[in-house]
Image (cartoon, rainbow, N blue to C red; front, side, top):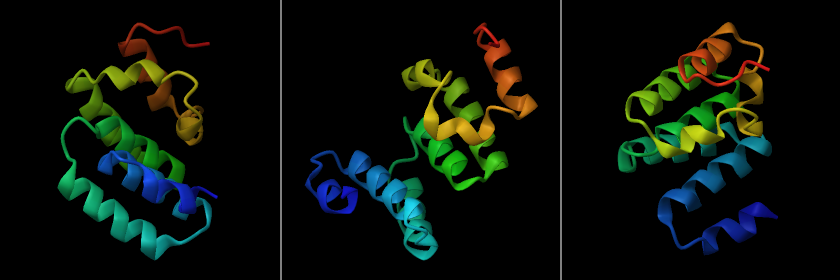
Length: 109
């Protein structure tokens, strides 16, 4: 189980990211809220894409698109995973997703 494995992750940002996703999958909203607040405070730079993934996975589309825009403006390399990222699945049908693909000169299909 991810909750047992994630504490062993050496990179703290990835460890918290994994714990957020695992707790979200288990429906532990309070734990996710706490971990997410901590993540935003401690790792605000170079992690906008991961924050977009978290918010998309939570179904919070507006926040996900805000963080995707920040990732785009920061030219984060992780944006290369945008098309087809399963954590962003909740965004795929949103017109803002296609607009972002177009802005990045990526195929819409």
